[in-house]
Amino acid sequence: MAIRAPAFAGLFYPGEPRVCRAEIEAMAVGLPVPVSARGGIVPHAGWRYSGRIALRTWQAITAAKPETVIILGAVHREESVVALLDTSQGWSTPLGVLPMDQDILSALRMSDLFMVRPESHAQEHAIEVQLPLLQHLLPEVMFVPVGVPLGAQVVAIGEWCAGVVRQSGRQIALVASTDLTHYGPNYRFQPAGQGPAGSQWAYEVNDRRFLFAVERLAADRVVIEAETHHNACGAGAVAALVAAANVLGWGRFELLEHATSARVTGRASENVVGYAAGVFRGD
Image (tube, rainbow, N blue to C red; front, side):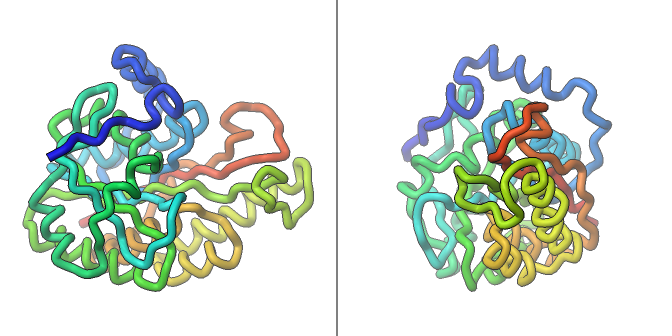
């Protein structure tokens, strides 16, 4: 079986192994002691914007020492009514090859809610940018990439994932990759006007609406929020995660950090993107 080559190394994150590890270690400096979590949400912009925030969730996930992580990713580049799988042997990053868990992949494929479509992952960054973070923290882990579009079947997709996790009897984590509101003229979305007031609205109001739906464990509401208020690009992945959390009895979501690209860089901008890290503590 083939190995998927990295498409965004050197762009969204460093392409050289030594630099990649050094940047992860620098981002980890000063982070709080991680909780242990079975599931979580991570942002997926370039590391300079959201890497440190994503690392907070990954530290919590790796504290639980999962054997495998199912990563539910945003689908930016194509339309689909089902979840999209890859059948590579593994994905290569600057830190080596992260192997796919073929047993979990086979279990997911037993449902017609999932379709094998490697080409959908070839130029998609939402999952790829997570992998060196996971590899650095948990070198022996396996993973399964699942692209989850926003649609009517996302709850069923999440519930099937939960069933696979439960039936496996193994330590398997679930992580959803999403960014939040894309606000400003570059994104053709500025209902609260241009400038600082609009950016603040995106952060304080629009992002928070979405995060509140997650905190309520309301998978259907997560979908409605994204469709109505355009406050997440990976809402399908998040809704599937919330649905899985409900099946698995992960009764509480803990928001670890919420920021925007402007807050991270310290530079005001008319165009901002929201980022959040959060975890489900599990049972």
